[in-house]
Length: 132
Image 1 (tube, rainbow, N blue to C red):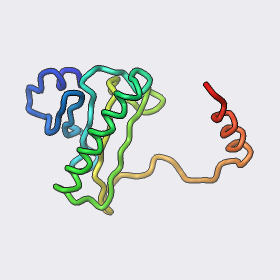
Image 2 (cartoon, rainbow, N blue to C red):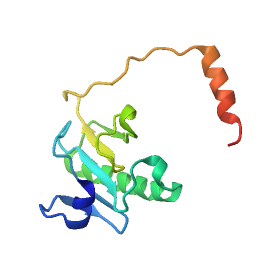
Image 3 (cartoon, rainbow, N blue to C red):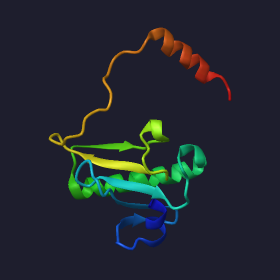
Image 4 (cartoon, rainbow, N blue to C red):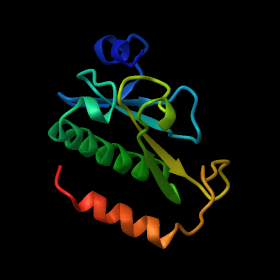
């Protein structure tokens, strides 16, 4: 689906592009201006691209966020990028959601904020410090 938009853009959806990325409005927007930033090279998810490619895409996200800021003047902005089915990825082509936010929009935080176990946090922190 996204590969076709990247290659052909038959319906003139793309509003921002460079050699590595394209951006277009989500056809099922969570809020007005909800945009998707997609790398031109197909990568299924974050694990299927290099750190350099990911940083190039992140620069495009920043550029799109600034365009939305100038045009829509949102009260906030949410950026998210999901990986694999369990991570809520529904289109298996890496993409970033850039969603302008307003106080009266219908978006809700997808988890309940609660403190984690201090022991679990400390143990995991130590594990993540290990090389590899």
